[in-house]
Amino acid sequence: MPEAGLEAVLDAPPVADDLSPVGILHRAQALLPLIDTLKAEGERERRAPAALIDALKRAGLFRLLQPRRYGGAECHPATFFAVQAALSAGDMSIGWLQGVMGMVAFHLALLPAQAQDDVWRDDPTALLACSYMPAGKATRVPGGFRLSGRWGFSSGADHADWFMLGAMAASEEGDTPEHVIFLVPRADVRIHDSWDTIGLRGTGSHDVSVEDGFVPAHRRHGVQERFLIGGPGRAVNLAPLYHIPLPQMLFRAISTPALGGLRGMLDAFIEHSRRRAGPNGGGPLVDPVAQLACGETAAELDEMTRTLEGNFDRMLDHARQDRDAPITDRMLYRVQATSVVERCDRLARRLFKAAGASALSVANPLGRICADIQAARQHAANQYEIYGRTLGAHLFQLDVKDTLL
Image (cartoon, rainbow, N blue to C red; front, side):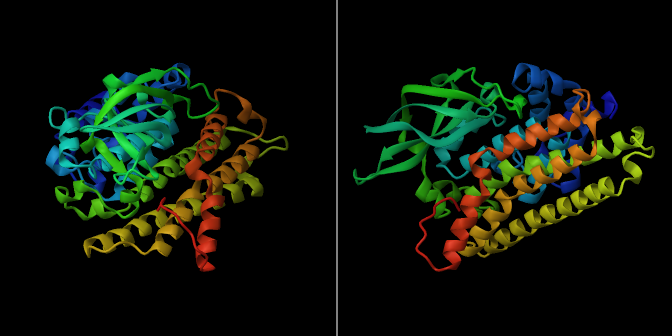
């Protein structure tokens, strides 16, 4: 898109003023030339360029799940993930950041109104990063908690104003510790330059730490509370969107970048194949193996995308009736979400193989996309085997305790 077109999008009214899926998606697509220009810098510096984060903020793409009372869009989850996939087609690292940091905004909407005001009252564009692993320790004190710990994989840490961090904390009854997520300001967080990886390099998913920081009681959210689709934020954020289980949003935010990355890889493979001749002439355009790889990739991309859309349509139908989605359904949706990256990885490797030796060039994006998809596959939320076994045990009517739903 010409520079004038990009500026028109960045200078457009707040995203809440244009809630159509087409209008929101247009904002994302307008950034693809800028993403293409800056992705090498993100790879080199191991974090997203500040100019690109600023462009995403100006386009309102981190605020798609933010409550409207702060100027957010409260958009349909399918629109949110379509934006994430579109950005990921240009650079999976950028799609990853937009999706994960935008999903944490959804999480904040479940916390008490006071916690939301702490973050967004003075700056509704404030960004949040997270690390939900219970790597911290929290001790109850008058008025709140003292929190200490070190957490890994905090994507976008360099650009975050606030952090959501997991810890074990004594329950109100004072007996068995419970897994709790705490909201912490950047001033209390130290960022460690630890991210140096073979894939998703531009996410800047560094370690972060807190040393004996005070967290007021209203800046906490229990994982059990999350499982019950509860949260005091629902008293002020009434949209059905906020009745969708948080883990369902989280799993999709971690797997959808692979859908976009694979779509970008398929487009790049087709374009590359138009210019490449095979050893016997003709090249991949007439190679039945390459044709089959492209056809099956396109078909599976469509299927996985439609499954995502259908799952959230059904969850919203339940939410509009003020009902929770059934546990069996939530287990099924999770397996479908967490198996996405495994499937994308298999399809990406087929395309890479069909591209031949020329795919080894660093100038060819196919290898980089493969590495990004493989990096996404390593995330704990994409280990679909665990969740498939849990669903199977549930179908056998075995006793399954599972709060990640």
